Picture 1: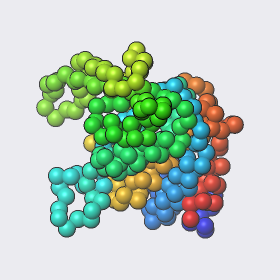
Picture 2 (picture 1 turned 30 degrees about the vertical axis):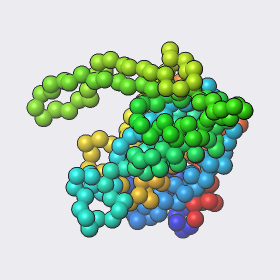
Picture 3 (picture 1 turned 90 degrees about the horizontal axis):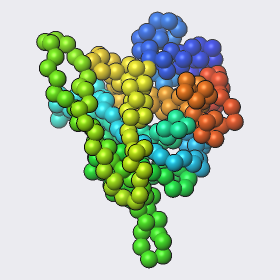
Length: 283
């Protein structure tokens, strides 16, 4: 990738983070899909380092956590015994601070206990102080949250403030051949540990973030023929997107980048600075 001009890289990363596919980006920039694939991996590796180095000691009141589904090559039901181990369903775990809009941690993997543990370990390295967790009722959260965020008070463990939010949806009857997301019928909230503020308990912000990710990443779009062909590429795409989202993209609500609002950066980064970081640390 060293022979690719920096302005071509900037254009390509801009298009990829705005939702264009590799094929469309290739047509518009003149870069081959092979070069673009290498650029995705280069930016993903550098973005993971950026997020891990720059997001440290983050302080906030609440963290919303949720996970969304995607796939590698094919859905789980179509996986054959001869397919590689990574082929099939995949999940992206995401944490969001509703106030600063910062995404302090994400994890790409399965929906198992080991992945919940890895996600919470990453979040523990980056978040400082006491925080309230708002999640759905996925059973793996309990052990992972308690393991990383419980504190010893001298006589026993103090559990973190944690609330779960479960949305129940209507069973809508749609016209044949049409797709529409179901409507929320009711919301059930429950205090799982500590003393969470139940009025602020919600997962709407992180769910909204899932929507934005799907809109700006063809590989995660619903009802699309675009998909990730390897776990390596799937891990690179969210890392690049969340680095761009945190440090480069100005959020319409807070009028600056989430990294600035969260105290993780002194000023917004330019896209060129992010790409230059990729050139330095992506190899």
